[in-house]
Amino acid sequence: MKLALGPLLYYWPRETLLAFYEEVARAPVDTVYLGEVVCSRRHELSFDDWLALGEPLAAAGKEVVLSAQALTESEGDLKLLRRAVANGRFRVEANDWGAVHLLAGTDGWVAGPHLNVYNPQTLALVAGLGATRWVAPLEAPRELVAGMCATGMEAEVFGFGRLPLATSARCFTARRFNRQKEDCGYACLDFPDGMALATREGKPFLTVNGVQALSAGAYCLVEELAALRDAGVRLLRVSPQSAGTPEVLQVLRTAIDGRLSSFDARKALAALAPGRLWNGFWHGRPGMQAT
Amino acid sequence: MELVCPAGSLPALRAAVDHGADWVYLGLRDATNARNFPGLNFDEAALAEGLAHAHARGRKVLMAVNTYPQAANWSRWTAAVDRAARLGADAIIVADAGLIAHAHRAHPQLELHLSVQGSATSYEAINFFHERFGVKRAVLPRVLSLQQVELVAKRTPAQIEVFGFGGLCVMVEGRCTLSAYACGEAPNLSGACSPAHAVRWKETAAGLESRLNGVLIDRYAKGERAAYPTVCKGRYAADNDIYYAFEEPTSLNTLELLPEFARIGVRAVKIEGRQRSPAYVAQVTRAWREAIDALEAGRFAPRAEWQQALARHAEGSQTTLGAFSRPWK
Image (cartoon, rainbow over all chains, first blue to last red; front, top):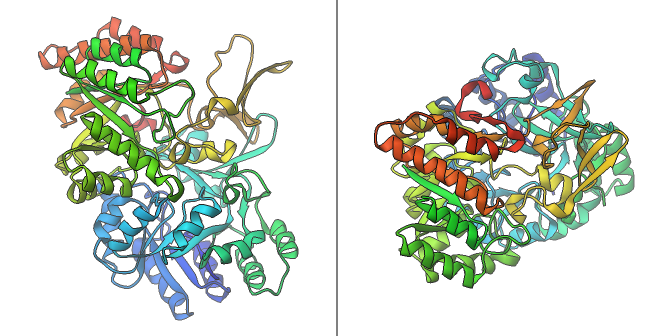
């Protein structure tokens, strides 16, 4: 099983971002997804900067994929999408059907986790349009994933990190500071791992990241490596976090290679995770549960 | 401008038809549609009766088959589509791309509407479904400003339907797993957000608590109006601030935007609320019917009695223009 680093969901200063991907180039990861996928107002890196960032990663032997934004609202969003589709250098991950419309007939694109491909019929449809990899929707249980793998499509599963649970047109980070989205002051730069929300009895519940709501705890499938392999999953996705991402990749690589027990791997990941470890969705249960 | 109204039961369907809906939308009594609640929706006999009632009065019926099937239950979804075609539904509302392809192949004469659960927010996405599968109409997620809706309507040959009134999804529809995260069920796979069986209310010394599968969604002091505990309308703590982190309990009401909708090429307005009572359907439908009639007669001005009727049915008695108004974002 290969390791993939999903697109960065948070907003970091340019220097931090560049340093992060320099470390990623040296980390044991096979595929790196790049690009701004959450908010088109974010501009620490331009589209061309993201493309340029792909080169040293590719030179280090990584497969580079450009991820398309999950929610397109404006003509500006579509312009970026068209540039991604026409980049001519790297594969593209489609995260909505507008991207599929533009990618249809080109070969080798990735059907992303927000495309809502839940059954073999829809999978056959995107395969017929040129998709060669499917990233499972986040709440997909084991049986669903296994059934999709059985079609022969290369499958990737979100395996570690805070789950991106929902996206809105409204910026919730700006809302916290009584700002409008158009005048947000880039408040999310101050929250490198998002802004924590607890319930009124103090239990960690969600994380706000601009227009996105993420889980408080980290989804973690390290104890399911054998089941993932048996199901036919070929890539495990790790979601970037501000500290410890190379270490997370190292732990998972070692565990996948059988050189670290799942017990020890879980313990190591618990120390690196931004919150508690959960795996409910894989077991067909609430996402914020551990089985 | 066409008026599309909800029906969770035969009495609600009659209320919609009798008060001026052009279309009534409904679903079968299972997870094939996004309002899979106990005691709600239609079996085959009720569906046939509802179709007869609407068709006798020249109105159309839409069947929602707008959740996402999996391999294990695929045939239940195709059976729902086949049943809609066999019983003479005027169109179906669908979200899953594979199911849309099936409907297009198996029932080329059946009109297809792209559900809001299909998350198509751009003309590129809508044109994909229009060009490949002849999808005739798309229901827009509640995320676009008026200006953005105008651009979409200009650049697609498909008809555009927007939400006019009712419960407000704050997140992009079809892209929200908050409910599944807390309780294991969400609209995409289960057809329900915050299902009633997972909701608990409890009076405590600190106030009335609402919980979803044990997670505290909100707590109300005496005299505070309690809201149904959907995750996006709860109060949470960021550091020491306790506030509605996503949205207050509020409903969408865009009645005042009707002339704008007409100007920018919106073809239909949808009223949310298949889970609501026949009285809700009757009163909300009547207000919107009168407003659309006034619009088409060239004498539209929002009337106090329309807004009062709608305010009575708004969550928390509050309404918002939502994303149609840019400051909301």
